[in-house]
Image (cartoon, rainbow, N blue to C red):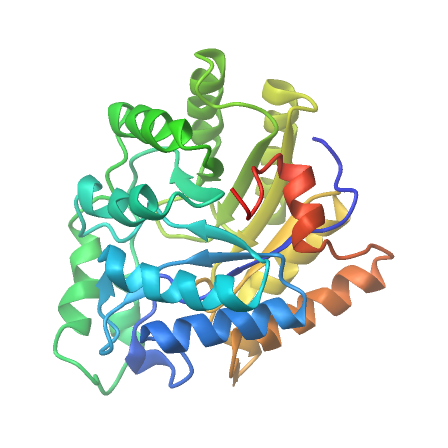
Length: 306
């Protein structure tokens, strides 16, 4: 692993997993997502990872909604914009790519394999639903896989790559590292690779710290110094895995996409609260937090101006 000169904090602002009935603080409208992202940048996040939603919280792939979010963020900050190509498992690949193809961000997420991505357990915890779409939406993940075929991965690498977009490679299991190595050998995934280890999703690798260290060992074997690493875990393990990643020389990701909590029994009231908390941990480890410009240099991004 290419050890981090400074630690990049990525904030995943809203995602497509959690639903409004779980927390009153989850940003939903374009204005709310943009404002929450700006607060996170002010708190120390260099990268904002963006999904979009309808005002009622329903995930959307509409490029016009993304355009509103991105426009507000770029008007007021120089943060690195990372647009999802994961979207939601209920979306087609064409829908999932639409916003990134229109906006050509410096960075886009790319899921490295098909998998069971199950969050139907949310239905066991919510007692009152705000919207009629929410319960069927989460239950659907128990019977429908999250599809990321090799041809769709290659198509994303080629089409977005032509516009200068680089990728955050989301790896939910060890096999996804080998899939990434395949595309690196074909010359489609170009170093320095940003590998985002994802832990604690039902259907993927568990939130066990031994798994994090194992993922880094295998990535070291496959990619040597041609990659940097970031990690997060869903739910209550978010802070612990961010701390572990930073301690190993990697980067961190927080945000209400991955966890609605600030601590045991305490909902996070903003993305910025989570950024402030992980920043304090990183600095307590004796490390510095990267600015957007420093993140661009480390990840070989093309720059906001282009």
